[in-house]
Image (cartoon, rainbow, N blue to C red):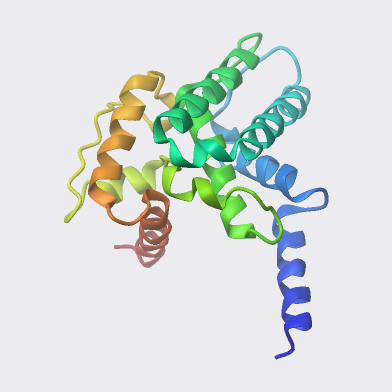
Length: 203
């Protein structure tokens, strides 16, 4: 198949799934849909809160994209990640209550979508691939408790209720150790597809 036509087909699927707009903003907005059903609160309209948060989060991603030196520093990436989570939590503290669990899902799914889009569409992020955290949700937490991983879920609440960043980061560090030498996000791609398939098949 001519590569030009293949590219058109891929662009068609991207448009259907992510909608119009610049690619990075599409990823941030699509990742919002992966957790927004768990939002609780009232006050300022959810849509207005989301629009402001999207602008702030896109800015955070451009910020890290412009700092290639961070691609050699896992600790610096983790600090950026914690600060980004806290930025989202603080943004929502005037009405809707956003937890660390919801913030991590938003940020980590955005990265997952960025890499799904590919370097050609959203350049400058490939160097962060090995540092990225995996998006925690019920499927992934359940899969990681199974052999050969046996990473116990330390929380007695749903992932959307997680609200202590230190505990969250400790879990991500255990995942890193278990996934080595491959990137945690690479392992997550496989685990999520397996978990989704098992649920579909009723296993």
